[in-house]
Amino acid sequence: MVTQDECEEVAVWTRTGRGDAPDVHVLAGRSHASAPIDPKRVAVRWKSGLVERKPVRMEELGVKVVKQIMAARVWSMPRTFELEGEGCVAALIEAVKAMCSASTGGMTYKKAVAICFERARNTVLPRYLREIRYKVLTSGFMIGRNKQSTGDKRFCSRCKALGSVMACATRGARGRGTLQAAAHLEETMAHVFSDCPRAHGLWARVLGRWEKTTGERLDPKDKRVTLLGDRSGATSTSGSAPEEPWALLHATVLRVLWEEMGREMVGGPSATTDSMHQKVQEQMASLADGRRVDVLRRAEEEVDASAQGGGKNSIEAFDALWVRTGLVRYTGGVADLDRGVRATGF
Image (tube, rainbow, N blue to C red):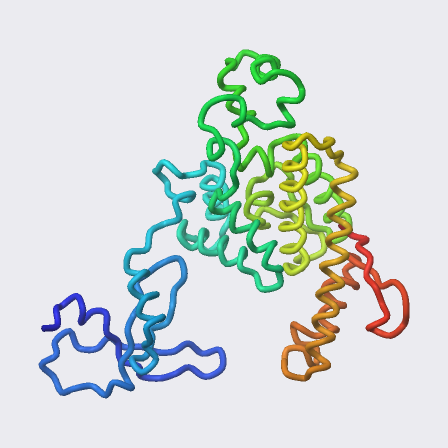
C-alpha cells in the first residue's frame, strides 16, 4: 500500500541538464491509479536540508544512498546554530545573522549556515585545515564549559596569567559587575579565536598585511571574519580579493591560535604576536608551494582538463591568484620544479 506521503517523495526524471543547465524534475501523480511509469524516469527526492540535492534515479539507488536519504529525513539544524537550544553558540549565531543582513539578495539564515559549512569543506584546504574550520562551526574543541562546567579551568589560561580570574574581572568590570567581566574571560569559541588578546593581536597583524597587499579591509573584531571566514563586511579599493588564498589564510590563523593555546596550557612559554605571525607566514608559504606543485603535477599527468589552458587548476591560475597579487613570490631556479615560494603578503 502506497501512502499519500510516499507519493509526494516520487518525481519523474524528465530531462538531464546539459553543461551548467539544471536538471528538470516533475512530480509524479499523487495517485497510482494511472498507468505505470518507467522506473528509468522516476527518482526519489531528498528532504530539504542545508544542502539542496537533486533527486536520485531509481536505478542509482543503492544501500549507501538509501541510508543517506533516510538520515536526511530526520535532519535538524546543527546545535551550535540553533536559535534556541542548550548547545547554541551566541557568537556564531550573531555572525550568521550579520551575514544575512549584509546580503543584498535577502539571504536566509539556513542558507547562510549552509555557506559556512560549504566553505569549511573547500577542496583547496588540506584535511587538517578543513577539520579545524569544521570544529569551529560545531564547537568541537575541549575548551571552556566543554572541559569544565565550573571552576577555574573553564577560563582562558592567557587571561588568567595576568592575575587571578576575579582580580582580572574586577579590573575590567568598570562598574559592570565582577561576574559579568569574569564571564568575558571564559574560554569560549569567540574568546579563543577572536576576543582574547592573543587572538586579536594576530588577527590585526594578519588582516593589516592582507589589506596592504590586496586592498581589502577586514575588521579584526568582526566575528564573521574571525570565526566564519566570511568577507561580506569587507571594504575594498582594488576589487575582489581571491578566495583561494583567503580560505587557506583563515584556516591557518585558526590552527596557529589553537596550537599556541595548547602549548601554553601544558606550561610552555607564551607566544608573542611576532612569533605567531611568523608561523602563519611559514605555513602559508608551505601551503602555497604545495598548491603550486599540485597544479604542475595535474598539468604533467594530463588527466585534469582544468589544469590546462588557464583553467582553475593551471599554473596560469596559480600565478594570477598568488604571484601577481603579491601574496607570494618565487625564489630559486628558473624552471618551475626548481622554484620555491616565499610568503610576502601575509
